[in-house]
Image 1 (tube, rainbow, N blue to C red):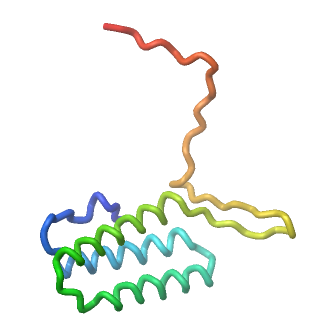
Image 2 (cartoon, rainbow, N blue to C red):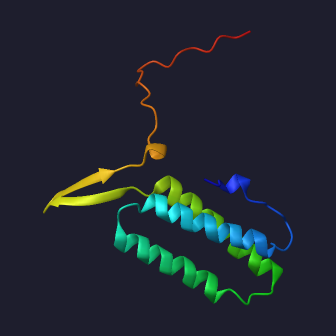
Length: 118
């Protein structure tokens, strides 16, 4: 998986290769985040394609950089904040977190440990 840190962060005009790489990264993230949810997969595919198509003719370097930043932010939000859920009853929802979204359980402590001074 390509992480946003792996994408070039050039301060100037994004190259076509960078835009294409972001497009592919968004689609890979979509496939992981909405795995086994055909409707969500299709809706996300249409939205990604629509946004890129709508801005395909953009020539302003500032606008392209802004759109790239938005795309990178969307990828991070999808990857780190979206959890799938399945309705299992009228008032029940089963959450299906991805393994990379789960954090190790850190035990709670009433009294924080003291840091040792050197």
